[in-house]
Image 1 (cartoon, rainbow, N blue to C red):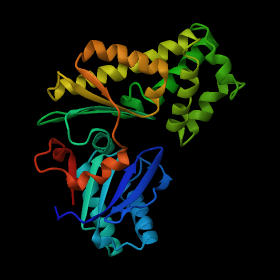
Image 2 (cartoon, helix red, strand yellow):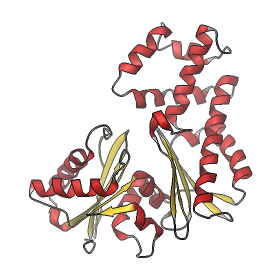
Image 3 (tube, helix red, strand yellow):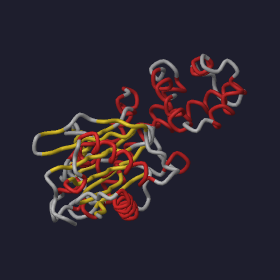
Image 4 (cartoon, rainbow, N blue to C red):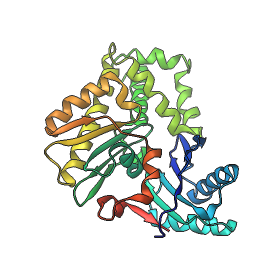
Length: 310
């Protein structure tokens, strides 16, 4: 890894949006936002393209900048770092250092820095990241087909299942049926339209707001909201156990899902039972703040094993 440049282009890339910020000796630039990454397509051209546009607009010499990225949708972090290096070299201007991590790592850094603890991030997806004295652990974040329990997508999808079960007689009555019917008077046409939507994951996640908004008055909605909070707490417990944390465990919460009162109440209740030493901690910063720290980790940091440099 090259010595750190005084200027860092920090990138926080998720499925909902991508945010970029230049941090230098003179301070930080305004945040630039782009559409979310398409995780089914190669990430290097998407992220490299966004980075090049921001650097060009700022008049910054690429060679004098470190690029630090926390992104969702990456399975091969070292491979993405190499692909980004090749992408920039193909443009004729390569950054001094490229640092890449899964966005669970950058979210952790933004929330808790390099100290031990657990961060639970629940937005469209859900991922939990734990850091102990010598180890890190990722829990869930396996995508909408295989995991992301407690995420906005999972809540929205369970809302739709409850609505369709009420509609066809398999499930109990729920106020959600009429709520969802406001958008789809013909409920039986909804699945065709939503499944054909290229943005279906975010679209399904958006219905989570309708579910949680009725959790105080509708038993079906409340059960879904409480399930989400309980799942997220169990994931925190798994992360804490894997990295050897028990007493006084800082737990920071990120994402919209845990801002709902019913979800959060269930989360707190379950967390007290499964992680008695949990200490709910307000995040110090954002995933973008955490991305900016990827090139500046302490030599002995357990987080270094989760970051690839090129």
